[in-house]
Length: 407
Image (cartoon, rainbow, N blue to C red; front, side, top):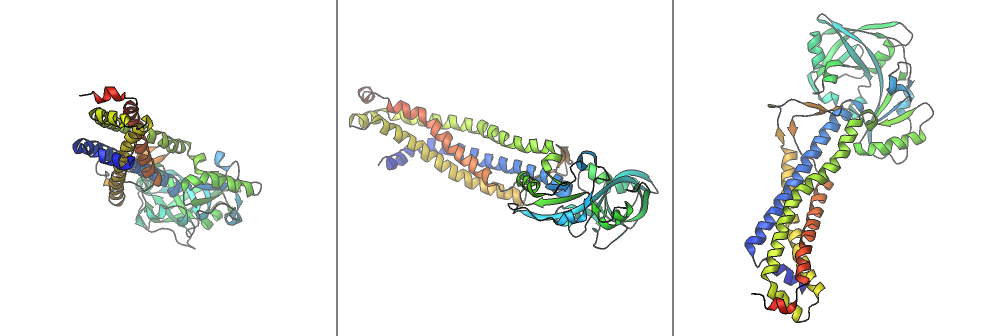
């Protein structure tokens, strides 16, 4: 009976109820959209750091990433070590060899990072092959070819098909030098990659560095980047001596902190937005209770216990929260879907921004994350119940005689 009575009481003043519901729906929908866009920004930042270059989990010699020593290398067979139990979301792995040197052309010379990759396996881990603005990516079995960044190509004055000279230090103490033909030019939006990165076939670089059959690291990609922390621990538990697994957070601590701060920001944004909503719910419930003072007095005089009155008012706020959450969830789903499918392109007004070791792309887009829908909905229901407690408590503590005399 209380349930039916509570639902009916919501519509005794339709205008006030609809105004309150409108505020709840708008708050929930905007919060869902805001969290979706923020998650999209985080996803873009993760993609530009992990899927363009770093990967999610990296296997290397323990001291390699601290000093990038040429001689801290591994056998190429390390790229095919067994996958530990529990690592179920791996999407690819690839061997790499790295060197630093000079790249020269007619327009001058530039310091570069030379990355030797497997042209077949590398695209399963990184997405650099999708960032080409001219030419093509490396092909299997190809030697003396390179893909370089657009800024580097501009500084050297070379285009696709042009030749450049590479000079670096080889592992045997000699000076390694050779000609490279530019097969492709990429643009990532990250000045560090666009201005200094040269990607070459792994066998060619092994020969140049006199490191045949050796690599510096094995880069692994997983489906969920946030799972990489646990996956790295699983690899470390089974890896042989001399090989260590590190997750992307070890290379990008600022990025990891930025993602952790996302949860804190989500609570703060929701708190600010729902505080105003709670005031509206509180006002609606208090007005409803004050208008029905004699009704509550009559119920109390006829034998209803105070907890029944309190339960009745809380049921009303619960229904208010559930209806507002359901409609707000629908609105949030539609807005998030639009921002995911279409988004907003800001490249005409702003340029990519480097932050926390990553790149924020000039666009707004949302991603579907269940937590971004569940959190606002649950919190709105909780806020409605909390806001309704004070009016419910006031109604339950009414004196029946004084309430019946209320005008």
